[in-house]
Length: 245
Picture 1 (cartoon, helix red, strand yellow):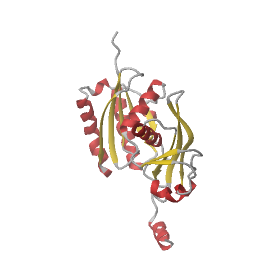
Picture 2 (cartoon, helix red, strand yellow):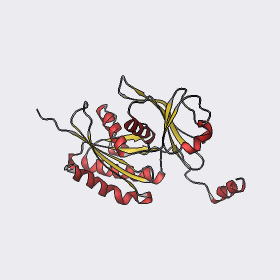
Picture 3 (tube, helix red, strand yellow):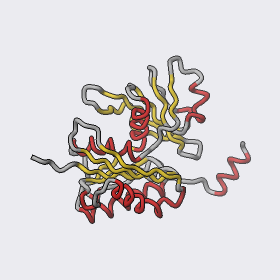
Picture 4 (cartoon, one colour):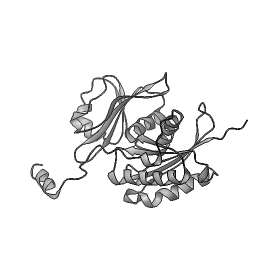
């Protein structure tokens, strides 16, 4: 008997990159076929995301209506970027009548470094949140369930308030420079992977796993994760910080 493959479209615009990936999976035991686009677009991600969706479906020789589910980088990340990805995914999910998988962008960093480096146990994922703060979380790979376990959930703090794992770990994300002082005093091995940032291929991998576990939401329930309410300093605050610099 022929089984329809699972076809999952993943989108991330949480950073200055616009990232789209299509995962085509026949069975849970085999790695999916992945088709992706990842471009530095800055504030113009909204102009490129749908053309990139068309490109990955064309490369895979599939029709958009064959899509089984959608996944997106739900945050934390750029306020505007999160809204862009959420809006596109909601619109497509409504049109296609398919479920949605929200994926943590910090967990996507952990998955990205595992995809790049192979087997590893602990990951501290840290992203620059601007305003002298960072988003961070700790994850540990659990070989028994073949999935990640959250050790420390997503947190927003000053860089010097980040808690480091008490064993060798990989630091994933773009905030290593902000943690350099603390890293110098870590007593065990730390591997740095600054290229392990939110990417649609990692979100597709995580999305497939969540989809098979039934961890989905409806289109109307797909919402971004905002960790910070304040997204910029006022003019007065910037002047005060400059005066004390």
